[in-house]
Each structure stands twice: as C-alpha cells, then as structure tokens.
Length: 233
Image (tube, rainbow, N blue to C red; front, side):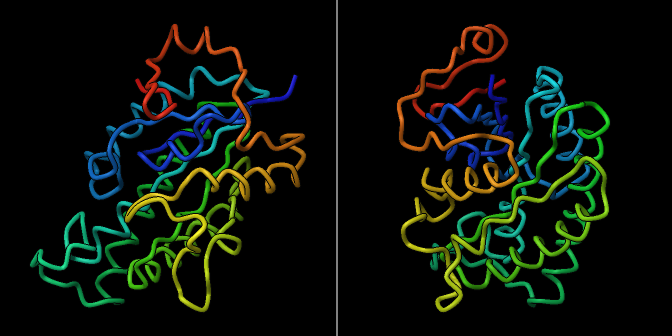
C-alpha cells in the first residue's frame, strides 16, 4: 500500500486538498499559527504534535509553514497589498532579515520537536513565493536558512520546488500557480508530487483526480472541512 503524505500547516496546506497522495491538515490562520513569538511557537508545537502522533511510520510528514512571517516582516501588516494601510516600513534587508532569523530559529525548534516524536519521514516544504517582489526577497532568504539547516539534520529533508513555480524575470510567482494575494492554487501539488516521485516516496500523481482514499479513521479523530477539503483539530 502506498504511503500517505500528511501536509500540516496554516491555510497554505489547503492547496493539497482532494488528492489521494495527501492528507492536508489546516491548523489555523497564519497570523496566529506562525513563528513570530515564543508563545505562538508553543501553540504550534502542541497542535502539530497532536497530529503527528497519529502518523504511521510508513507515511511521510510535510511541514508547510513560514510564509506569514515573511509577509508580516514587510512592516505593512497582514495585508501588504492594500496600499491604503499606513504601517511603518521596515528597512529591508537589515531589519527584515534580522527579525526573520528569530522566526527561523523557532521553526528549527518545531522541526526538532517533530523529528523526536515520530519515525515517519519528515519533509519541510520551502516557503512559497507571492506576487510581491519585496516579500519574495525575504522568502528566498528564509529558504536559504532552512536549506542549510535541513542539509545538516538527520531524518529531515528540504523540498525545494520554487525553481518550478517562481519566475526569475518578474521575481514573482508564476501566474499559473497564483491563487490569491496570499495563497497558491492546487496546481502546487504537481511540482511537489514530482519531487516525491523522484525520491521514490510516491509512485504516481493524483493531481486533479477524484479522491477515493478511506477517510473513516481520520474522521474519527479529526474534523473534516468540506469547504476546503482538509482536516482540522
């Protein structure tokens, strides 16, 4: 039986809905489930580990977090695309990068907590870009830090697919993957599936096919959100 990929994250995890390869878990909105403070980290650890304890050793876990931090550190609030909002700008890159390092260290703490509580394969999906060039600078920086960290860790792999979904000429996400000002659409599944196939973790893509997996046991332990096609605590 082919293993399943448990995608755990904020609202970005919903991009992995309705695909037999993935079991997406939406743990809550990004501005509360991010890495901006130690308290938020503590809440994240509790929620993520409550899901991780249900994952079988033959399955894999994808953590999909971090984008809200890169957005907030632009210094324009949670909706930086709304030009009418007047927030003090951070002096990029010095202050933005300095603050992002704190989020990175908290993410490393979360990763280590998960690693120590499971025998499943642990994957960290790169932070995905948006259509905001200034935010993508922070995204790229955060990903460099994560890549360096994961390359030194045992039992942790970094899934980097931004070379497929990012347009280096416009320095923004490719239009075909754009969902809304924050999220990508479900076509994001394809480059992730290709990465997983290349590693022998899954055998084939189920993108855009009707889901047939048996969700009975999952529904006993978690709530299923029909609107977004993902599980919640």
